[in-house]
Each structure stands twice: as structure tokens, then as C-alpha cells.
Amino acid sequence: MKQTIYFILLCFGIGLNLNAQTDEYAEVYKTLKANDSLIFDRAFNHCELQHLEFLIPEDFEFYHDKEGVINSKDVFINVMKNGICNPNNTTKSTRELVDGSLEIYLLKNNGELYGAIQNGIHRFFETTNGNKVAGSTAKFSHLWILENNKWYLKRVLSYDHQMK
Image 1 (cartoon, rainbow, N blue to C red):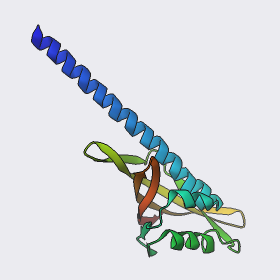
Image 2 (image 1 turned 30 degrees about the vertical axis):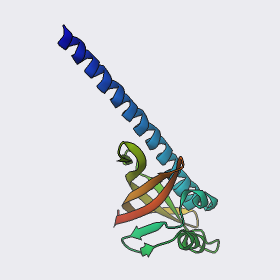
Image 3 (image 1 turned 120 degrees about the vertical axis):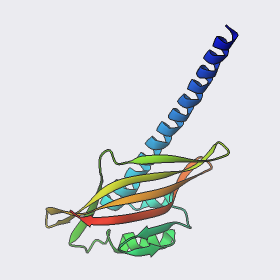
């Protein structure tokens, strides 16, 4: 009888812990997916670059398999302003997240959440004179860091760009 009670308590305790982890994962997933939308849908697709100001830290790093390395927030925002978001462009690039591709891996230090890795696949399109054509498809890995209850996109890896 005593063993049965201990077993039930043990299972109940493990169940509570798994639910807490699942809730934490779901909350982080939801938050980072929303942040992904701010960065790509709002900043990249619609050139609302103000979203980058509060999501990217000064020591931001971006590694691209075709375009090289960007190693600061200011340089990245300037590249966006003068490149993709340049009002003189005749072609506009847009990005879509591939449905079902987003994955989140929590990072903890002694049980305390401090960050997350966000992996996924995205597809790019080029629109010229109203004609939208498929560009490349690529994989990405983002390192998000949690500081003072705020998520920052610290590192980006954009790789395996393939023309489809």
C-alpha cells in the first residue's frame, strides 16, 4: 500500500513538472513565433524597420551562406534600409515561413530559462511590376536570449539557400 501511494505521488509530481515544462515551451514558442512575424512580415516584407530596434541587441550577428557576415545591429539595419527596403528598388523581396517548419529548443542554466534556439525553413519571393516569382528556400537558426523578461535575437544563421 505504501509503495502504491509513493508511486502515485511520484507520477503526480512528474506530471506536474511535465505540464510546467509544456506550458513554458508553449509560451516561448508563441512569443518567438510572434517575434519572427515582427522581424520578417513587418520589418522585411513591409519595411517597418522600427521593429528591429527593440528586438535586436547592439552585438547582433548575422551569418549568411551567400552574403557573408554582418556583425552589428547598426550595420544590419542599414543593410535593410539601403537594400531590401530601398524605395528605389524595382524588385521587392518578401519572405514566408514554411508552415510546420518552426521548431523551438529551450536553453536553461541550472533550470532557469535564459534563451532558445529557433529553427525553421523560409521561402523567398521576388515581385517586379506586380509579377511575383519564387526565389530561394533556405533554413535558418536563430539564437534568442532572454534578458529582463525581454527576448532579443542575438545570432542568426541563414543557410542552405536553394533555388526551387
